[in-house]
Every structure is written in structure tokens, then in C-alpha cells.
Length: 277
Image (cartoon, rainbow, N blue to C red; front, side, top):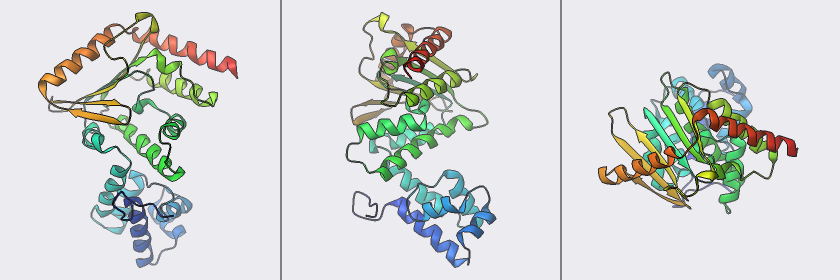
């Protein structure tokens, strides 16, 4: 069954694939020839994109726009496809996230999205998106991974994450996945632009219980917040509301372990899950 959008139209990722196929055929190219001309992308991958079976990466779309001289048309369709798999309430936040100079995250029971590995994100989406098809889950995972490209910028944003210890006590069904996730966090925390802190159980109650908060500082100094709960969320921009959220974040952070001790605790959990295997 072909993937469709909420209004019954063909989904943007399918439209994108069809348009790429049309352009390829108009230029008299086989999949192998297009792969060779563009470079860096296998013909089988491009074929799956054309059939709407796999999301197109930003790199592929940009390369094809340039190769076919389509003036960014493919990138525009790609943007629509991305919006389909991002919750409506957070789309504007995600757009701004790409140009942020500082990102602060608090997570109470799960690993923050910008720190998630592909397998962890897939298992999370599979558990929470009970009606989603494998294709839809793949699209959600791909979009989450694309968001992490913000750290590949020449000047990546400063990233500060405060994670409740509960997130580390909630293992995945496949212990390999949680081990790889913890290894990734420990490695990411060694970057000069990143600080990872754990809020331990020993601190008891705190002002961010049960919630997820992301705070963006934009290049012009303005702030935007995204507050999320189960399947819903709000983008916050008013000064008074932002002040309260920043205070909540700061209070939670004041109870967290320093970065070095936090990484030690994460490594302890990693050892615990490794010993179980």
C-alpha cells in the first residue's frame, strides 16, 4: 500500500521518489549511471528512494538538485517529507534547532533525541508508535538522525544535557542496543562542545519530574523552548514562560552530578549491562 499523507494525497517522500525517477528517465540514465554521475550514493539506495521505500538523505537530495539543475525543488519536497514525520507541534522548533548556538535538554525517563543511536531510536519509536508501519518508523528514525547533523557544522552548537538516572535504568529489550547507546553518550560527552550530566535518584524530587524540556538559544540571543509530554507538546516563546522554564532547568541541573562523575555513573551502567550478556 502506498504511503499517503493525512489528507489522502500521496506522501511527500513518495512524490520525491517519483520526481527523481522522472528526472533520471528524462535524462536517459539508468540507476547505475545516475549513481556514478552523482557519486557517493549506491544505485540500490537511489532505487529504494525512487520507490518510496527509504527516506532520501539531505546529502542525496542536495546532490541531485545540483546535478539535475532543479533549483532546490527536490529539497523543498524533502522538507515536506520531513514535516510529515515530525509532530506538528514541534516542526517550527526543529527548523530553528538547525541554526541554534546553544541547546539545553532535560529528559526524565528516556535518552534525549539528539543523543539517541539509530537502534535505540528505532526501538523507542516501535514501542511508542503502536500503529506505525515499518516504513513509517524508518522515516521517523531517519529524521531523528538527520537532526543530529547539527553537530557536524563547522561551528556546532554548545550542547548541555541533564538526564534523570531513570533513563539509564530503563533498558531496551535487546541489551546490545542499550550498551551501544551508553557507549555513544560516553563518547559524545568527550566533545569540547558537549556537557552531559546525570541527575541521580539520591537527589529525590526535582522540578522537572515527568517532563522533557529543550531550550534553544538562537544566534540573535532569543530563546525558544519545547516542552513535551506523552504524544503532545508546546513551543514556548513568551518571556515570562521561558523564565520559569529556565529556572526549572537550572534547579534540576543544580541537583545533577558534575560531568566527570556523570560519565563515571554512565560507565557503571554500561558495565552492568555488559555483565548481563
